[in-house]
Length: 246
View 1 (tube, one colour):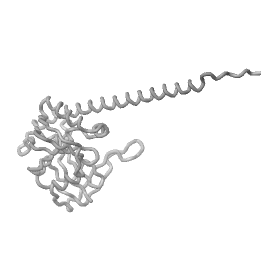
View 2 (cartoon, one colour):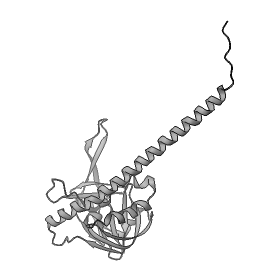
View 3 (cartoon, rainbow, N blue to C red):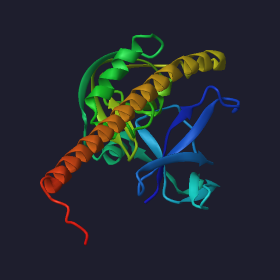
View 4 (cartoon, rainbow, N blue to C red):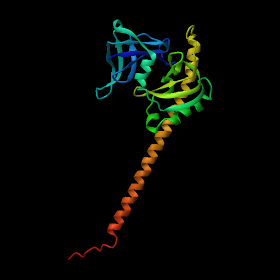
């Protein structure tokens, strides 16, 4: 049991100098956390770093004193390499939610429509709890390449939508264009990162509408139940005479 170094996440509006957040996937919990002392990569090819020894430390607690945010610390001496395909099989349980044909350009307004296809493909209980799009992993099997959607410019062709751990998605793609990370321009990466945040906002609006509909349906159900109960009560009391008090 251990943890994997997975593609880092980008937070373009944060105060972190490079806006890059190292991430680790803990196999026993099937969750990913912010990581320290770990190999940071935006795109991995062929293999992923795997650490047999790690610690989960509390970053913050809620009002009840329970752990709210955790961080992973790894023992770098236990580092080894695991094939990306093996990690994908583990993280997805070799399951899928479905397939969709996408022409997703994350820097164009048409991205809303394409992201909407993924949203509509998922069950209601999944899409309202899943992580926002830029956090999703993207896997290109032929190139043995693994990255995160925040580092992607474009995806084309048939996409297999898979679960990623407990709260994420992994897109298995036919064709992907990734940001220029060989000679990165932080200015361009930040600009593109800010643009891509719009699809997160769009996803949150879809979820908010979904939750609003659920609340309305629950309210309508309570009203109907109340009316039925009142009707039955009226049937029971109809025709009953009140006795005289002597």
